[in-house]
Length: 155
Image (cartoon, rainbow, N blue to C red; front, top):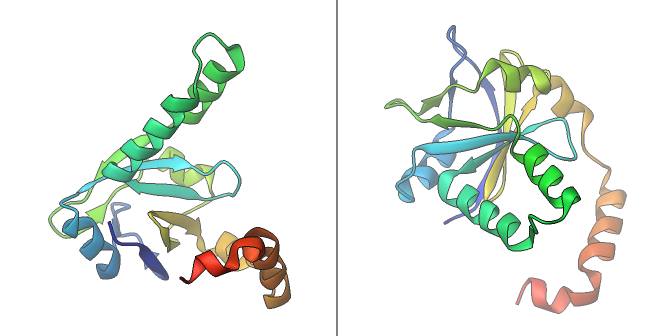
């Protein structure tokens, strides 16, 4: 699957539906997918939208690490899966995220969809404006995370 790239400001319609940006819709439809799994992000105040095939890959990663005879593992799994929703794209490329999930991240009518490789983040416009780091901080993070194996990154 190709990567989701870019950020798009979107407004929901009167029924609360959001039109998936055409760049994202092309990726979804190229993978013959119209189903999306939505969950609250673990670290940020946003929602994560997974194309169904990517969601299945995430679930497999979790299954491979879970031991059902360890209490903290089953607790994590229960909490991770709590509140998920599956939504579908309609014929016009619109989707409707349950109100309870939108409320969790303070998203109302205006949202920002951000392509982050294999998934999409959905932010309230205000929260998105408050995120971000300056170029020096980004450089420091790149050096810390990628600096040791930099020859592998762009090879």
